[in-house]
Image: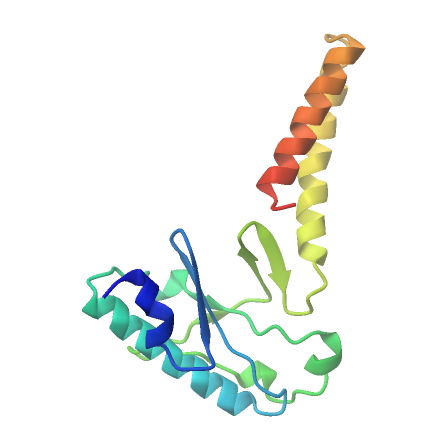
Amino acid sequence: MHIKDLPEGVSQPTTVDIFADDTTVSSCLPYMDTFGLCSRLCQSTFELEEWLRNNLFKLNPPDKTKSTFVTGTRLRAKIDSLNQMEIRNSKGDILETTTSHKLLGVYIDLDVSFNEHVEHLCKKLAKHIGILRSIRHYLPFSERILFNKALVLYTAEQSGV
């Protein structure tokens, strides 16, 4: 078996996305079927763990594996059991549920608002502006512009923009 066989080895319609050493398992169901969604994701997690064991891949410890339920503000208010949703691995460990997750450089939160991502970018840029402010007396204007462009482009590149 090859790593390209992995998505076919997990329950449908769950999808598995692989980028470098990050694997994302996702599924979608009508918002009222939270039990079905949890069951599907638990089953997919079991199948993924089994595939990894059978193909001699090392699995991260449970504290490095997380779950995030992306619903949006409007739907979250309609889901009574969202706080009771748990995804378990094959050993019975409950995966930590987070309110946001960094995926390929972008912070995705449960409301799909990207507020945390924007906040993260603003903090990074504020640091760069502070650096520019402290060196402005030592560099000519043209070099400050060049330095600024390099910092902004680097920050944008690192943040997935």
